[in-house]
Image (cartoon, rainbow, N blue to C red; front, side):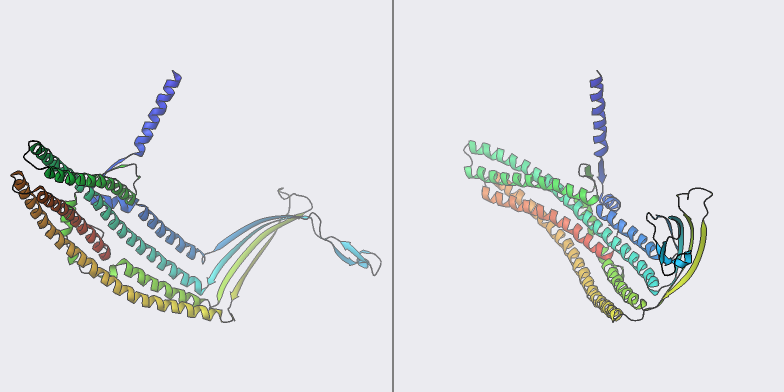
Length: 448
């Protein structure tokens, strides 16, 4: 009885654990993007980089703030050091040396030192560099977020296109199966050629094979979307938007008409920040030629004895207090400082040259993305008309075939043309979504 209860309790815990792990999610495209910006692995790491940059700035600032170091030490001279003195000092014979020991065998010390940087040119430049690094991390985070949006949009569309393809292929298989059954009966009655049956069988086998492959791709596409969202792969995911609704939304958006402000582009901002960092590196090397000034305050208490009595309240302790300042002046470095200054200046000039090139590349990238989006819209409209024509042609050939006015080869040709048009239309819808996401990324637009 106890064993049964234990097994029942264990099974219940296991079921609860499984239920807790396997969650169900249903996302529109916008909901998926919002979720990914908070939970995707890329976004999480980018947020950590910003947090690291903030901590690094505090590390740099803390160098110039007061620093206090404490030390507690204890010494026990197991064999105390001896020195020799002339014998006549201790009442001995003149000309002899007598070994003696001075001090106690044990010593305890408590020491605290306060240091304060008063002036250091490299410290001031370091503060500027830390602020520049934070700006770089924030801009990098913006870029990563836009890449997450683009990636999720593409993955979401990839899942939708396989889902739509499966529906279309299943409908085509149902129609082909019906046609095959009808022509099979006609053939059995001697009113049709065997080739007509075989042509439909070939088409049906091809479509079934395509369906099986699309189902495999669909499973993989969903897993890839979960990965880009930061969802555990075992969780269930349902998409609430349709491929057509998203494509129509992108086609009617005003993205293509937005003016391109290159100063808002993240790659452009990163290129500018790189110039600033190279400038500060050169400034840092120059600042190392300036003197640095620091001060300190040291306080300590010491106690001496031949026995370990330092924890007793009666043990005497002797205090001391010292302060001082140090001025460090670079004098001669055998050309090391000059070489560093020239090297960082060359790096600064390289960054400026690269920025000019990057500016042109970004501008060309925008023009290319805009052109691709406009072409995708035009192509989708054309393929929509092609699909309607292919449907009419297939329908006419279906009627002609049933009436014995066309061959099975002509029907198969019309069917193949229709199936190709269906897939091309789906791909064109996805292309509109993908090219729009790319253009939004360049324009630094977060909302789809």
